Image 1 (tube, rainbow, N blue to C red):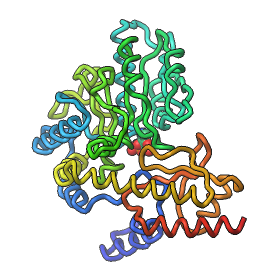
Image 2 (cartoon, rainbow, N blue to C red; image 1 turned 60 degrees about the horizontal axis):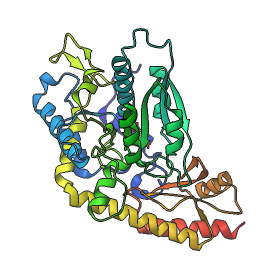
Image 3 (cartoon, protein in one colour; image 1 turned 120 degrees about the vertical axis):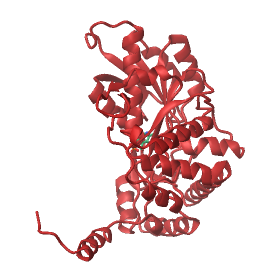
Image 4 (cartoon, rainbow, N blue to C red; image 1 turned 180 degrees about the vertical axis):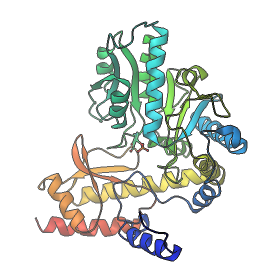
Length: 392
Ligand SMILES: Cc1ncc(COP(=O)(O)O)c(C=O)c1O
């Protein structure tokens, strides 16, 4: 470790590191679910930077902000009496939900010797890899079921795979690779009929589907109005424009949180359910600020402009002879070219200084049309794609 250095020197060195990063403002980041946080959310985040909701008795005001934030987000998801937390992101939220589901299964089935039989989790092949982490941590056997022609979970495959060891079913509202919305209504009916926990992962879609529906987009209902839904993951740090790390888990009933609470004897509150202990109050404050400042209208505008840009790109790609994997349901556009391998196409795009990602199922170039991507960036991207195509 070095001797103390001048502040000016430290800051200069850090600026040098940062100069190697890409900025969202460049419009070059085309494959990320994160975006430039709104200036207000950054300011509020800094104002609450020292608050710790791991010990909420010390920060009662900030704890109240979290409670209100959960209520506001839940109201977007058709739930009046929510329980939940602002957490670090979709992964933590999903892992919490899986803890609740496993413990609920153990309790309701009065299982005396857990793990003598496998705990099985039914989820679509399109589910996010955070469920692999949940599987590893919680000892869950993942039953990855097929997708239908539109890359949504296949309902018959779900039904076929249910057995006495099934701890939960997962549906996704806005899949990571293609932005598709699983048929949550049908999953909900299965969950009710079979008395199984249903978790909806709306980490990506949660901050756009309700707003798009509000302005008239015809999208399926994925929220708590489906009686079988037990919990929902919804991430402010994706389409909610808050700083990283800001995720959110909402439960329909208190019993699901009680099932994952552990005793915290030396803290100001005696129970804790989150995976993380010391926990940013700044994330709650920034989310509260954005919800109040943007309102339904503000978020609807953002979601709408991302959809307009997605559809514009999709149409432009078709005109240029590229194949869309599917018509965008949310703001993700995935495509290939009939004459170029996906990896080769990705390499050529990267050589022109764009950052895209490749989806795996099916293999394709994946563009996540986040708010930092503007019309002019799409025009420039299409110009480069035309050049790549003419070189084939
Ligand atoms: C559908 C879905 N769920 C969960 C996650 C994990 O979220 P995080 O990276 O915030 O942990 C992602 C991330 O892309 C996602 O797309």
